[in-house]
Image 1 (cartoon, rainbow, N blue to C red):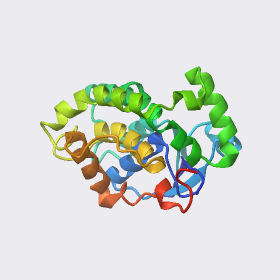
Image 2 (tube, one colour):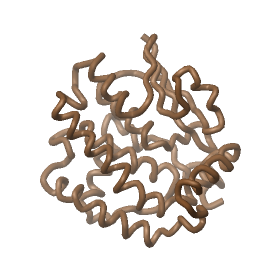
Image 3 (cartoon, one colour):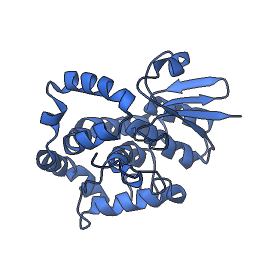
Image 4 (tube, rainbow, N blue to C red):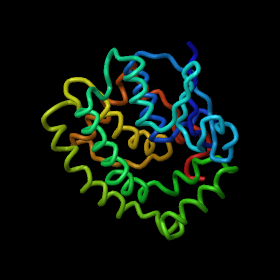
Length: 236
């Protein structure tokens, strides 16, 4: 059975930066499922029109088409029950907390820290769309939104619950990474791929978790192309 994952790409087709797509990449690796990936840009809505919506990730698994990172995780557990990601209904409900924690607590501080790096990492054809949609969402210009000092302070406070758990265990889901880890780590991959900003100090328990997650599944995250790997791209 052929699988295809449509992923958001930047100024280089191999620069894949969406936190939601990274959740799915780790979930597929967790299941041991091979997948081909296809780069996609904001300006290419027609390329995923078959999915009935306009955002990635989109997973095509044979005749099945699934969008939304959490729904893809649910689909993978249903169709490929070995090595469960979410578990039963109660575990799935708990996993939704981590989804919202990542999106509502971690993402804002990261965004304020890296937003201009992110803008520069986006393909030039997508920048007008990104600026227009994000400035409408933020209620301010990207340049006004960009405040690394403020962003890092926000992130430091938001990471307190994560630190508490990582002081008890190597991973959020115990001795090995699971859905909770992937739901949060997607945000760290988002920042890592588009920016050289240091989000946490190496004395922080979160730092050790990030390093373990980068090495998980054969170094899936560590092998990913970053903006700093592209000649002349960073800081343009």
